[in-house]
Image 1 (cartoon, rainbow, N blue to C red):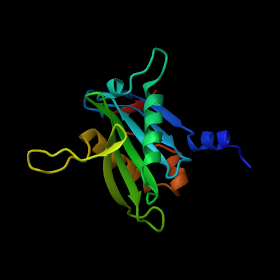
Image 2 (cartoon, rainbow, N blue to C red):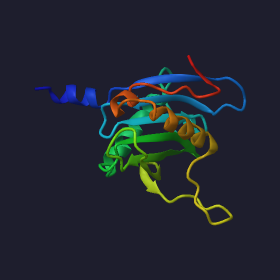
Image 3 (cartoon, rainbow, N blue to C red):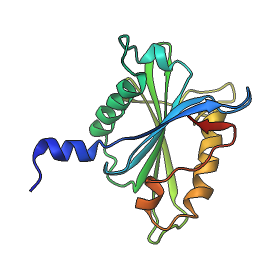
Image 4 (tube, rainbow, N blue to C red):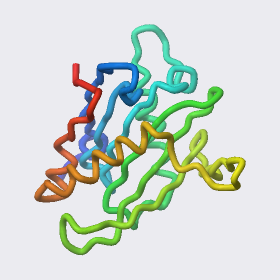
Length: 177
């Protein structure tokens, strides 16, 4: 039987990739990580907007690891048991640690046509969506919508959730370095 430390290690196993933007119109994401053994599995994208201000680190440390720790702490406080997997965008706003969550559920057979719930947290607490002048609620920024628009078609080409969470789609305008 695995020890507690081994279970924590497996649960928080991280696959991390850094992006290089190929043009000013490319989505402004710094990196993405996947927690494939988390329940539910999570893929998170780190947006450059306010990231360093929200997740300050000492010299030699990585903002992505600080943000990953916040992601895990936040998920542990939420009831996400109905989701089969979660996509997230992590960013900062005036020093606040922001996460846009997209929880996928409601499919019986892979790949299916899942339902998607959207919610956001600020500093680990579920936050009401911002109201625009038309009294509509913001869901995510366009960079986030671009990523969601790539993730969905890619996922439908995969053979299982495990395969999907362990492989990454290419995102136009971003290269891996």
